[in-house]
Image (cartoon, rainbow, N blue to C red; front, top):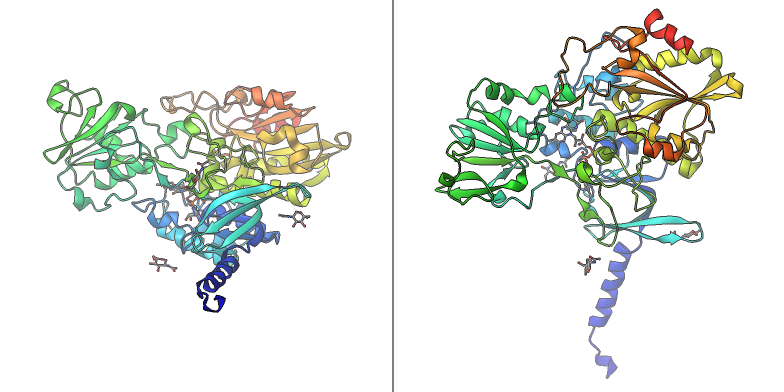
Length: 569
Ligand SMILES: Cc1cc2nc3c(=O)[nH]c(=O)nc-3n(C[C@H](O)[C@H](O)[C@H](O)COP(=O)(O)OP(=O)(O)OC[C@H]3O[C@@H](n4cnc5c(N)ncnc54)[C@H](O)[C@@H]3O)c2cc1C
Ligand SMILES: *[C@@H]1O[C@H](CO)[C@@H](O)[C@H](O)[C@H]1NC(C)=O
Ligand SMILES: *[C@@H]1O[C@H](CO)[C@@H](O)[C@H](O)[C@H]1NC(C)=O
Ligand SMILES: *[C@@H]1O[C@H](CO)[C@@H](O)[C@H](O)[C@H]1NC(C)=O
């Protein structure tokens, strides 16, 4: 009988073997980076420089694919300041917000555009060149999913991360760096009728499509204002609704708040030219369609707008409603049994991570780029290229010590060189300038104060774990952190008031604008002191605290006002 056995089982076996060979033998790398956006490329560069075994998976066919679509109206909001009057390369990076870090001078953004706010296509070209010139190992057209961790390898205590691409290839890696950005449009599920609104992600960028129309924009970030700016010359009017008051970047000193380059609609509102801005919580509203027009109503109101107050600000209907409510992190790439806590409150769109950029739930899983911005949300620049290029470097230094026993880069010098070293850093360091309040220079005083060792751009929130995280032992330290005055920045504050700045060295602690602050400790702060420091304070109370008075030119080299007080300290 068995001579007549159907061939199918054999075929099935062959198919099974075929399937097995393509999908089940994992391709292994020490490091997997997910995402070839600016942050994935930046961390990739450092791994490449150190000859680590790494791969960058990118689902699209180009580097920086976020910028194929965004910003929709194509104008970057990161500045391309090509001239500073100085030739110091490190200093110039303080005012170049688009370049990634590398040793290749041709990869500076000033060679790519003369525009102060360049076109997004230029950034794409730049990121392409960055990838190819530096020979980064990017595997394009590889969308990875089903990320999960296998139980720790008991013989080595190491984790192994597994993932698949859409073609069924199986990859494993010992360390995972998630650089996938924050790019899923946020569509609220508590606004009835939200489907009548068109999203920022696919709204037309042609003003002609809004000719003579009344438009409502939900949201009040840069995307909302950028959209309004592009069409307000074509519309009857634009109304804008958001939960909280407008936050102007020049008042908050936070680059993610509304930038002057986008804020034209504030003029047409305050000059009573029909456009307008008002506040309402999304949870209170609904959108209703009637006679082909869209109405914004409070939920408790009846669908008939005539039932509202007869002077209700939003009583006239709209032709279009545009949703610009931000973006969120895509969790769907993780297998559903991979626990991944998100932040709470205003950081809820970010994965929850420690100050070493590691997932709180998943050892050996790290984050890089804009998705690490929970650590400095609405404070520093960690959500933007000019900030996360440095935090990616910090992450790399942490990884080098933790996995390869390479201590944080440092240099040691006799104490007689301390002043000069500090002055040089104050006046040129870019990482601590961009990532103010977050990354600081740490000076370890050694050998009874005869020598010092300098660690640059260290994440100051890890300072109580200095040895564990950097490989450098020390207790007597000076941390140098750039800070704005604490009560100065804020959405409603008068940041142009006449007494906003001081030039008086003895009043240095009242400095409002960005200025260096030195913290001297004889003992490293404890974990408890770190956890209980008041919010908005960079570091716990030191033995000595020294502010260097703010400077209009950001040149902290005045012999009397800057250097003398420092020398006394
Ligand atoms: C409208 C808008 C405008 C902005 N403009 C600026 C600006 O002008 N300047 C600035 O500095 N910042 C800007 N930002 C902030 C911006 O998000 C970041 O600077 C930057 O794009 C984030 O870089 P990233 O590398 O962290 O993430 P992204 O640039 O988003 O890169 C993530 C990459 O991961 C890939 N990816 C995601 N999931 C997977 C997967 N499962 N498998 C494989 N690949 C995957 C994506 O395709 C993408 O290429 C803007 C943000 C928004 C929302
Ligand atoms: C990437 O894919 C897009 C869309 O499929 C295509 O138009 C483009 O030419 C591709 N670019 C490259 C560099 O392969
Ligand atoms: C566990 O570690 C041992 C020793 O290094 C190694 O031989 C083995 O392949 C590892 N297993 C996995 C699943 O990584
Ligand atoms: C995960 O997804 C699978 C397949 O969709 C489903 O069967 C399973 O119940 C899910 N598990 C959890 C913990 O949600």
